[in-house]
Length: 300
Image (cartoon, rainbow, N blue to C red):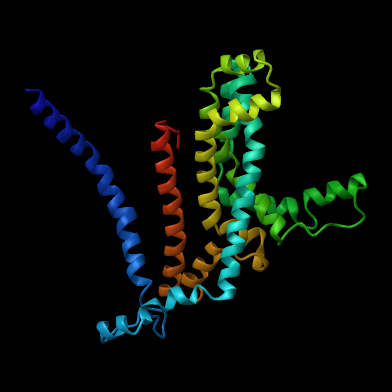
């Protein structure tokens, strides 16, 4: 009887999960498979896919890897490197800024104000990300709010070039991704057992030692989740770099966008997009291994 019940429970779980798997298959796996196939093709004169007369000869000649080989050109490698280091800087700054904020909300803030503070963190999501990026353009431009403030206070004698450079792109990326770091950190720090901090202090540990040996290890699931949530979209974003960086800051996301919208080279754009997707999937795979090894549930 128990065996039948177990089989029935597994069958019920499979049927319940079926809509999720179908949705993932139709809107994620299928487009990814199409992208992967197109990446091995060739562009025709008018921006479509060039028909391949002899598929076997095409594969044996190695021409099907031409788009991936092209992506290794120094020009594109420089774009990839720029995307990686800017995503790393964005993630690091978000972590440093978000940790004290999340710690204060989860541990130090009065309980009656906790929901209000969380609401303030979520408020930016109520406005379109595109509109918020345009707002930063008005703040950072030569006649913008920040330059006017600097001139009015006498900190500078002439407007600073704050827009259309790496600095502006980093500001926009950090601002946009900051809530995605605060929320996972809050979810982990909220579960923090304060008695462990008191025990560490009673045993003679300094505040700095308690922070690195007790607080940080216990908050590590939230740190890892926040790093993934910030690094992944930062690696593939293109709106911020397009609006705040102009033509001076081209990232991998801009490269993919240009190949599809301007150059009309779908095979090469698909190859670059698939490479970025492969990196993201690898990060998510290692994150899944990490959470499974720890045996903990991390809010995503």
